[in-house]
Length: 166
Length: 180
Image (cartoon, one colour):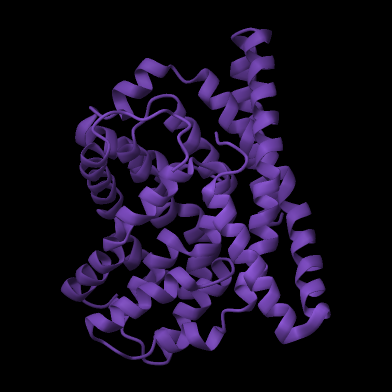
């Protein structure tokens, strides 16, 4: 069974589960939330469309060499800072992000810098923020969360320097 | 959830338009069309999951007891609220199409920014989904486990920082659907 199929089964299984709980609270509750969910979907579709199609264009104008160049073997805090920028600017999904991290490790990138890169990518890679977080969540929350997340790739790098290599 | 068009959407739209023009100047109309067709098929593929995410969020905000949520995840929930948010984010199954609608539902029924930040950050940093599916195969088990151990304190710290900043930025609660 493929991972995608498993995810879909899990996802629709959860929908069915909570839907059933709502239904047992009474059909009006069920109908109201069904209507609410469908309205959310209709409202979100244009934003997701903009995110999916748009981030493809943004990704196309970011040169890959730029990202990998930012993750060179600079072992200073400046290296950590450029790694954080690289993480935020990395286009594409997890395969690209983690592959760049692996290449950086193999080509002499410092471990704290790669940790900072992976953590920054997980926290605020622009494509996930545009594509998923902004459409689904209040924009004020998203910007706020990204802003308070900024120190944490640096914290992760500092912990990595303290406790040493894996 | 949100109004269909807000400042964020407008800024993204401008960014996208500029990028599309740059792609067009570099690769011509074919380059623009290539990306468009690829991304349209991607878009079609994720639509059902987006629908599932929206339904999940709507059902959850309907069935969750609001007083209980605001007690255990609200502004006064303390460290315990941040820990619950963290634990919840770490065990939440699925991808972004479940995490963000559920986080949005929690916000709507009384969780504060701090606990919700802890949940989202925990999902993205110590959630097992992405680690098992992508990080371990690509970066290796040693690096991944070590990176997760380093990340363990971060969701609570991020949630605490979020709460700390939030009460100083917004001493009075704003309207729920305020955009900016």
